[in-house]
Length: 127
Image (spheres, rainbow, N blue to C red):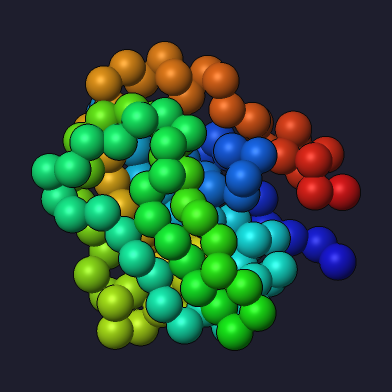
C-alpha cells in the first residue's frame, strides 16, 4: 500500500508531521498513522497558550482500535488548535495533511526541526 508523504514537511518517528511557515509550525498525524489507527473517534489537544517541549506529549488520539499519545515536533507555545476536530474527529482520517491538522506552535527554536525525519527518511521507516 502506498501512503501520501508530502515532501514539504518533516516527520517524527512517532508519526506526527510538522509544516513550518514563518516560525509557526502546524502539526498533524501522517496518512500512515491515521490508516493504522482506523476510525478516529476522539482527539484531546492542549489549550492555546500552553507550552510544549520537543518530543513531549501534546495530546491523545483515540480510534476504534487504539489510544495513542501525540508528540510535539518542536518546543514552543500553542497558538492555534483545530477545534473542528472536537466535533468532527474523522477529519483526521479524511484529510490528515489538510483539514485534519491538529495545532500550531510558535517555535522557540526553529532549528529543532532539523532533528526530524525528511519525507524520504519517514518513507523508509514505514516501509
